[in-house]
Image 1 (cartoon, rainbow, N blue to C red):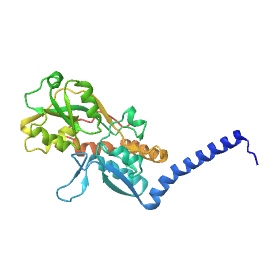
Image 2 (image 1 turned 45 degrees about the horizontal axis):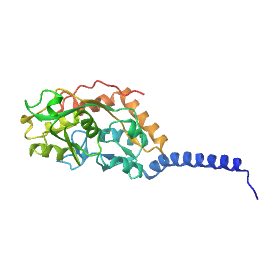
Image 3 (image 1 turned 45 degrees about the vertical axis):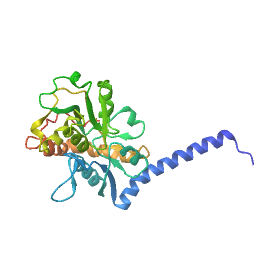
Amino acid sequence: MKLNRRFFLVALSTLTFLSFTKQSYADVTEIKKKGSIIVGVKDSLYPFGFVDEKTRRLQGYDIDFANEIGKKLGVKVELKAVTSANRIPLLSEENVDLLICTMTITPERAKEINFSYPYFISKQKFIVKKGSVKSLKDLDDKKIGTTKGSTSEKNAAAKLPNAKIISYDDYPQAYLAMQQEKVFAITTDESILAGILSRSIKKKDFELSSFDISKEPYGVGVNKKNPELLKIVNQTLLEMEKNGKANETFTKWFGPKSQVPLVRDFKIVP
């Protein structure tokens, strides 16, 4: 029996749409059914995601947001350590359900995954030896450490065309390389750098640069196959802003009594 080609294509596209819609909805349904959500986080990046020395458990700013999303869904949060280089592949391959790991929202990344509203905003700066750097041009012929697959890596290469950018698996490795004088400076977001210095036994020898080279808004990463989950994440973030939980979480990790004092100069908005 011959089928009308136009009818067949329309029917096929309709079935494909229905299948995608059902699968996207099933993702959230399955998360609730199994009672847990897997969230990719950093595990050595104070104060966003790190292992507490006493409890041996992961905690931090990003982990607190993950827990709030878990509460919204009514499920347990399972944390999975990720790096800047492997986090998007892990999400795309559905090895994690969400990414909450100091990930800057960029147009390039948005082609691969969906992003929530920004839940944190920082600026990219440098850690340098005290008194060694006055302006960006002082770094343009130096070795600069950062991490693989990060926006910091790309920004540094663009702003410092004559510098040698050396990328490590994580920021603690980059900072160690700086202490060993394998690199002249390291660069990433101010909040991360401040966290590194706050826990360093040699922090008196180093300082943050007075200048920055970019603004970095962090978003929660969600698989493009799951728009329903993205909607829930955004609802959670807006509720946290409205009820004061977002500011409370910021103050907990970055407020006046924190080792990493910063001023919250943003709001979570659509």
